[in-house]
Length: 185
Image 1 (spheres, rainbow, N blue to C red):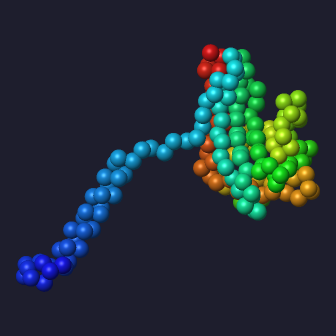
Image 2 (cartoon, helix red, strand yellow):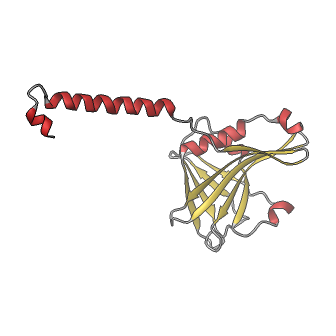
Image 3 (cartoon, helix red, strand yellow):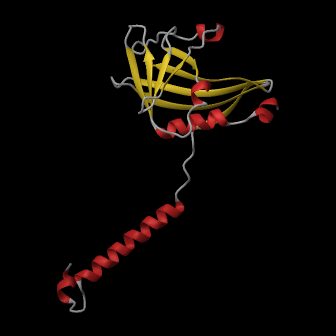
């Protein structure tokens, strides 16, 4: 600080320009060295002949209750079993009406209904878990955008979950992934 007043050749504008240049160079260096963002789509070989591709994300409803949303595509012996959305509510707070349809809405008037998957596998899941056939809905989504999931609850009310576009993009990646050759291995 004393050099500012003592040195006659020093200009405050020169120091400002050097500081801005240093900040810009630092930002460029950070961008150059940054790791690319990784999607959270994973492949699992659960059993011999069974491969699952999935995206798992945490969502919150209008009451700030945590939900886990997993979209998965499963192949058994090289054959597509289906593409499903499994919603897991916080135990004791997110008790799902498993007979009710899941409503999937966009910001416009577009709305779809996902049918619950009711079979021997899903009947054994805890009461805070529901699974829906999501393939018909994902087949209609052209590009990632925000979605609203309206989940029917056992209490007769609903939970509203906002799904960000980057999550929808992951779901579309799972849906469009063609793992036939890998699933058969």
